Image 1: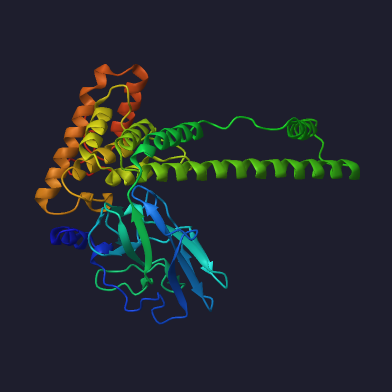
Image 2 (image 1 turned 30 degrees about the horizontal axis):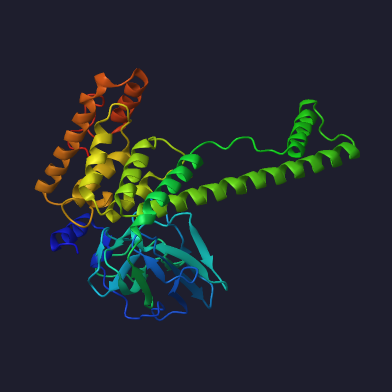
Length: 410
């Protein structure tokens, strides 16, 4: 559990830290209104093994209009749902929860139909021992239109709702299954990172080519027959585009699910795979296929913390690899996890006492110096990309000397 010193760090930032937040008195999530939230098993599942993704659903309901639900589960944002578990032993809290996050586009109007939001407990909790556990969640996702942008505080979280408890059973994993599972997940993640080829059927290709030819010939539907033919072609091409988009979305969903499954595993094979995939993901990648931060969140689940740190240190110093924000974040968190159960989230990493801030600056500077020392060993293209990374840092180094010495990394 976090220390009082860490709680004061949250307070110094003016961030509403979920670990310091008082619970609402109602256990049904209603808080006295006609909108409520309850906790339910996801797909009816309450039996898990250590290393499984443990997902429960927040189910929001309302008898009247005027409510919205924040549905965002972006892995790049801190978690705002606080998970509480009884009994106290057999699990650890690995990440802090934050309140008062801005309202994003991922919000839905709560009407007559319930809204379900899955919550991955493994993002902030790691189960260490088998047993029966009771889970409740405190969430700020349910808002009225009037308070949808209101920031909460340590002393008051009026929008927060506490759910009922849901019982889950955790059992020991089968270690013999992990090697094959990790290999399968890595294959899926590597395959889904590749661009999709042109998978048009012959009939679909003929439709697309025909429409393209019509447009190149300047046919704008001057006659009624031309107009109907163009409308029919446009409709068919639209259906092809919708099918392709659906294929891409299903592929990306499967990719994220595979990344979450790998992130939750705790054995050495999973550790090696996490470190490899974090290091291999480029700095600039399509957010729809990015998995590095999902895997960074999973570092706390690994049992062999020293192996994890060693692998990430090797990747950071390897002149064949490229430095990235995700890799550097993973390196810092892996180092922390060899010393304690929880990691300092990015939102509070540069806060704290002057001594803590100075220690963070010195550690960051040491990591940057390690990269600079490898520049002569890098290929021309690799060196150019590495210098581009160094220039973009909000931290002083020989390639962006205009930065203030007191800057902190972005």
